[in-house]
Amino acid sequence: MSDPNIFSKIRIVLVGTSHPGNIGAAARAMKNMGLSALYLVRPKDFPAPRATWRAANASDLLDNAKVVDSIDDAIEGCSLVIGTSARDRRIPWPILDPRECGEKVYSEAKIHEVAILFGREDRGLSNDELQKCTFHVNIPTNREYSSLNLAMAVQILCYEIKVASCDNNKISVEWDQPFASSEQLESFYDHLFSVLIELEFYDPENPKQLTTRLKRLFSRVRLDKMEISILRGLLSSVERKIRHK
Ligand code: SAH
Image (tube, rainbow, N blue to C red; front, side, top):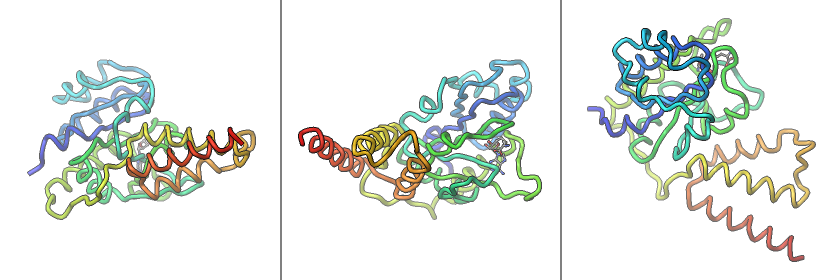
């Protein structure tokens, strides 16, 4: 049996959606699979009658949807953030298929808040936005026509969460420390990059792909809260040393 407390910790985040009909259809897809936490980052047109029509009996999700100004607001407090993408990116990121995504999301929602980000109809998610994610998920499609309708992508990933919840016994999470939240990771990156600038190791005028590569490294490692505080302590000692030289 799927547990409603676990489902309530799973946020579906739609970023910059243009068509309100897609928001309604996504709400319907979520409710069919037992999910309810809908976050809308700067939707172009919401609330809107077309969203309500397409939601059918899921308009309660629209009424309770959280409309926010930034992705950081939508993922605040989340310790697992997954980004969806129809395309291969220049720098590949740790990737999950929809089944692995469903299993990971369901198992981690037992212990902390989780978010899945969906992009704009015309452009998807930007590279910066995708770099906020620990994993990317790609729904296998026809190589010549890979981009699904937004709400259909939401449907597939919510369905996989539902499947994982029915197969609950297979899945467990074993780690001695809680994973870092998205805002702890962001402040760690800010701290790290400012120390690297001070050390003249990193030149923001000529960034190449240093920050992206470092973020990807730490995404692969999956830092926990204890490791973040060790690294923050280390960065502070480096700062003290260079300032009192
Ligand atoms: N041209 C955009 C497509 C956006 S489709 C791009 O290349 O990214 C709108 C959103 O639907 C995407 O941002 C993603 O969230 C979801 N989506 C569409 N097709 C997908 C696929 N094959 N795998 C994963 N997500 C997909």
